[in-house]
Length: 148
Image (cartoon, rainbow, N blue to C red; front, side, top):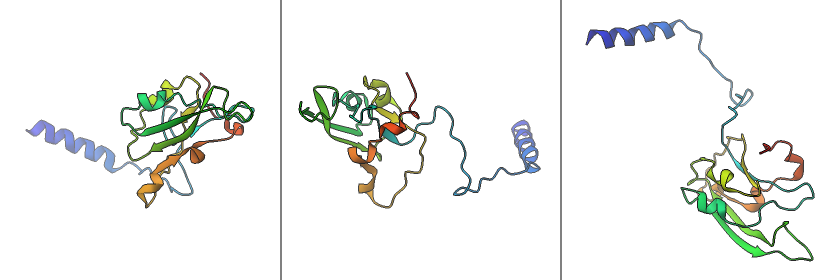
């Protein structure tokens, strides 16, 4: 009984005289760890076409059932992706997402990535359902994406 109490007091006194670590949040930001998973993004190829071919493997791999993909046939005259199909509708419900990264691992086209953005708060539930238009990033951000 005395030993746990002494150990707890020792930890308290050890930290009592240390300088507190404070970050002035909006102005200062901490650098995220390399394995941190934040906001999802859908990448494009260098030519501007979408990487996502609507295979729905990300939706199947998601343990929280947070991803919905509706595929459509690609028009040969005006293609949206390099594949035969493309994701006509792509939605991620961030209220369900557990940021596990399984969608990123399952994607054969390297279309979906979890970036370092962690400011995902909002006041409306509807705002947490991210659509394809909100998730797509241009090829200029391709330099940010990790190479596999």
